[in-house]
Each structure stands twice: as C-alpha cells, then as structure tokens.
Amino acid sequence: MKQPRHFLSLLDITAGEFRHLITRAIELKAMVRAGTLYEPLKNKTLGMVFEKSSTRTRVSFETGMVQFGGSAIFLSPRDTQLGRGEPVEDSARVLSRMVDVIMVRTYAHETLELFAAHSRVPVINGLSDLFHPCQLLADMQTYFEHRGDIAGKTVAWVGDGNNMCHSYINAAHLLGFTLHIASPPGYQPRQHLIQASQARIQLFADPAEAVRGADLVVTDVWASMGQEDENRERRQAFRNYQVDQRLMSHAAPDALFMHCLPAHRGEEVSAEVIDGGQSVVWDEAENRLHAQKALLEFLLT
Image 1 (cartoon, one colour):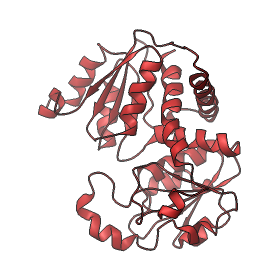
Image 2 (cartoon, one colour; image 1 turned 180 degrees about the vertical axis):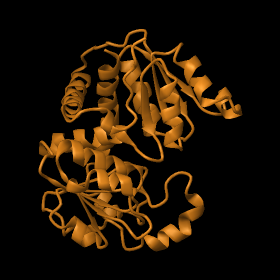
Image 3 (tube, helix red, strand yellow; image 1 turned 45 degrees about the vertical axis):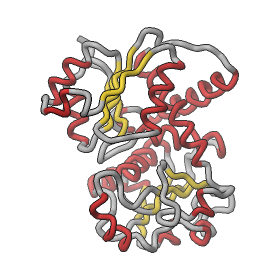
Image 4 (spheres, one colour; image 1 turned 45 degrees about the horizontal axis):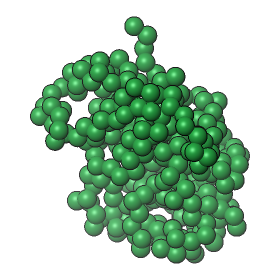
C-alpha cells in the first residue's frame, strides 16, 4: 500500500510546495468570494481528533470540508475510546480505515507521530506542543496578500519560544526570510531547531533590538494551553516583552503585526496594536480556512 503524505510540520513540504499552497489558498479565497462552487472532496470525510480545545482550528477545517463538498467528524476524548485509554496506534488503524484524512490537535508531538505511523490516510498536525504548521500557512498567505513574497524580509518573534516560534523557524528556512527571536532566558526555542536553521535566525535578549527594522512582528500568549499553573511566573518573566506601540515604532514603517489568537490585550500585546492599523490578525484568522483548504486539496487530490 502506498504511504500517505502527512503534514506534521512545515518540513514535510518543500519550499516550492509551500509557495504553491500560499498561491492556491489565495485563489481558493477568491473563488469563495466570487461564489464559485468547487467541490473536489465530494463524499470525502475528515476525521478531527481533538485533545486540546479549539475555535479557529475546528471551525476552519469543518467549514473547509463543507465548502469542498465533503464532511468532517469532530472527535474529542470525551466522545471516543482515546479518552478511555485505547492505544493511539489502534485508534489510528481504525479511524484511517473509515475516513479519508485525519487532523489531530494534541499535546505531545510524539502522539501525532505515533498516530501518523499507523494511519493509512494523510494526518495533519492541527497543533502540537512542538509545531503549529497550519497557522504558518495562514500567516504566510496573509503576508503575501498584503506585502508580496517574504523572501529576504525580516520577521521578529517576540515572546515564548513555543510551537508557533518553532514553526516560524521552519518557515524562515523554507521561504528565505530572516527571523529575529526575542525570548526571556529559559523560554527560548528548542536548541536543536535553532541549530538546524542557524543561518536564518538571530536570538536577542532585548525585544527592541529584535524588532528594529522588521517587516513583520509576531507574538503569542505568554502561557499556552496546559501551562495555566505557570501563569504567575510567566507574567513576571515576560513583563518586558509586550508588543505595544513603543515596541512597534522600532519596526519598519509599513511593518505588519500578527498574532495567532486568542489574544490577551494588556499582556503580550496592547489593545492599541492588535486593534490598530498595522494589525492583520483578522485576515490571518480567516486565512486558516483558505490555507487549510489548499492543504486538503494538495494531500487528497
């Protein structure tokens, strides 16, 4: 049996495929706006396995499948045997005999890899503790729409060296932009990922230095899902890492601001920035739908 094509991180696609997905997402978005009926996944089913809760991931994948003429099944641990201790491998073997593609949103990236290793159909990473590649498809689509190709540009990541930061490292490697990362000590991205893309990355202690001249400034919440008990110490560690108007003033005059949402105004970003003229977070959120449709089409047709 032919091995399915999985999308567990951005490194599962080539630079050319990444650019193709961005271009295709923009085309699919235009088709939706024009009211064009396009149903390449008629009678296809997406299984959506959620260990972590979600707004954008669930709605975008479900809507995308409906628009493509297919359907999606929402599966949470409360509704499945996964939540009652069925081995991940067994769930993957069974589900992949019934659906055409599976999206998994989980905590440990190893869970995703184990699931993919035993699946007969493509598995998509809807978020893991290590990577959030679908969000990067949407972020890059948004940048291309507003400013054109990102090759040769500078992106500043301010905040936690988390799954989003890791995916930005992969995107810098594939699309040829420079990534400045400003994280407090102890919260920097994983060392092996930094080393793998060293030519594209610079680490900074001072957020203002990281943001200087940047074409895109990106941040994320200080405490991700599952880190709520670290809230107090994280607030203390990140208190000088808020993206506010003062910090944005160090970026290029036409710099964009992105955040994968949900956002905490007054913590990682000021209301003035996220609700201001440089922010493209609502386009970015909508583009999850179009970018993931391009991905589904790519994996299944």
